[in-house]
Image (cartoon, rainbow, N blue to C red; front, top):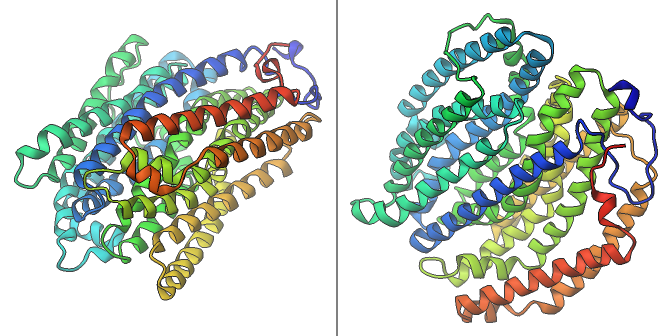
Length: 543
């Protein structure tokens, strides 16, 4: 390995994404493709799920209540399962695989399974009992006579146990990822979407309170997701035998890494929570409007940024364990360039085509013309921060892989303060001015906070020389800028007034929107080719 590694300060030809050696090159690209493919399937079904929600429930009291009831376990899921636990468990698991015997690695997994499982059971029990208090804390605006508080409380008693099941699912996925098995964990969210779609369409009409079907669906989906992982763990002989061993060295190390990571890896979710608390005070429907726009923004974020972060964290952890600083830096550099390649045009597309996207996907049934306009406003505000959200997903693992959790916490605190100050200021100012899109101010505050978070993470890695840009970066960014400008003009020229999108049939809307996206994407990539960026420069090659 060491005799094939190029110098750490090696410069690459102008415009190249940069070769990553065989260990992390083609394997990373293949793994990212697998995760992206599974994530695409999940996101498409998630979009179908949200369309079903919009058509059947709209931006109503029922939907507001479900969003809050589902947000609480999901927020904790992202803190513990997808955030802090993954960032703490994967590096330690990688170290056990690299430096310890198979038996010791197995003992570590057993200890984590038993210790985590019992803690989760206790937390889940407390959450179910304290459901009214939790709803009050995250949605104080629900207190009143409109019924949102009581409905959200009833739903939360069924959605909160999802935290138990999905956290254990994330643990199983972390084991599989460490062994290079990315497909099954990436496919797991598909199960949730399928169950929720079925609950909304078939179960809801059978119930006296149709909205409760969504809460029941979350509970059943959690069980199904956990059971789905077991055969894949068995295939690699990694099904754990849970043991309560909180004093195990590996468990204690994971806990040490988790405590600050609970905040540092999930600042974006804390920011969304702050926005949700304020949104609950702005009136019925504002929580739902933010939800629908956030779901559209999450599509490109989950499809690419989260996928590549999922794949690179185990690889970065292994490189750090082997002290392969050159490999480590190259993986980060490659991830950043691919992020700029994909995420910037995606953000521009969301901003320019916000109204067509919302009208085509959600308009109809309980989702009104007004809901389209209001959702598009917050979608544009969220899209401004898409690059920031994506870079946080890419840059944070560089800290966690090196078992540095304190720095992201400090940076996260700054970002949270920015979000809180902007959220309160914009909500108050827009409400005083009589502007109907007050919720868009909350989305904008969240975006600005994400950009601040990403910039500070990036600056810290630059100072530590973890990120070292080669000479190809400047011409590459110039090409990206020129191609994005041409694409923007194309999208603006092909777009149509909102009235047309609202009055046209679903077939006409879908056909024209698809054409606009395909033409815009074609112009973007054609411009990159004409400007000298060749596909070979984006390929991960062994050198």
